[in-house]
Length: 416
Image 1 (cartoon, rainbow, N blue to C red):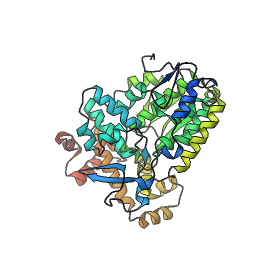
Image 2: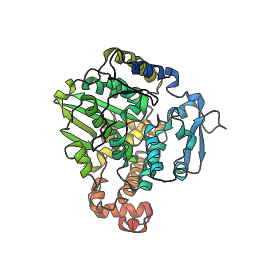
Image 3: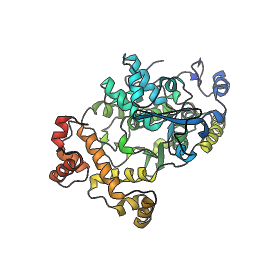
Image 4: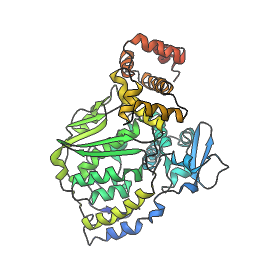
């Protein structure tokens, strides 16, 4: 299985959900590998966990998600519905990278509230927040701040399973991306892929049920992996007209730009990349309409059993504030308009949940300040701007109010 310097796979055979390789062209009607793939597909009811079979076992600072009955940590199925889940393939890729580097994984798993048993069982779904925390811990342990990007370049996209195969059997790239947008929740309930057409073909990514500001590694993996899959499906080295990621990086982005073929804009308004509109009609190399129709039935059944938009109101408000902060003062009305409701309605809904807009805003600012100050290459003046402060002095006063320290004292003491 050959790879180019960025880890692109030259796919000459079909891998089933398991590990057996079949000779012949993928998705060609008489290929016995298709039968192997279809037999390997579990019944739709086994593609996800039933809420009644889950429990939360809290210990230390983390939470473990697993099967069976608990002593009553969760009070209702509504509690379970508020936990976005993922197949956990990305977490397992990170664990494999840690093991290959000789890094003990037990302590890391304990810190993020996961267990070796959960990781070892590929049928187990993981809390998306735990996966995000695991990637952060793995990046620190491996001394690789671009771990998500590295994994996107190295992984075998077929390990995604059903979602990848329904894309790879689609007729055109545009159709494949529409499949991605519709069925991404089957793989990760927190990810919301979008695909829209106009003067350009735009692939976007947002979060549901998870604060966007809490993540860097997972979102980078998804963005770069999505572009890589577009290239694999069409056999062309597609170069985006624009490639933007919402969070900030102060350095180490040259390799990312080489991979994309153009500058990667960090601190963009949205997580998205844009291709030439003609790319939507590019044929997919392994298109198979009959197989695609069959897989669509599996995807629709799986989607029907996934939760709807389970994003808590607080998370929606935080994500809206995050995108507005660098533009200056953020008001309740600004956030309400972004969420498609009136200021009065948003205020009432927050009050109904015992929430206060000012408290959410200040708490988010504090969390982002700590995260940004952890990046020693980001100037304090830049951080102040990112957080919506017009003057560095105002940011300094806010830091002293939050922590009792100035920004520079926080960096010196490394209290975060």
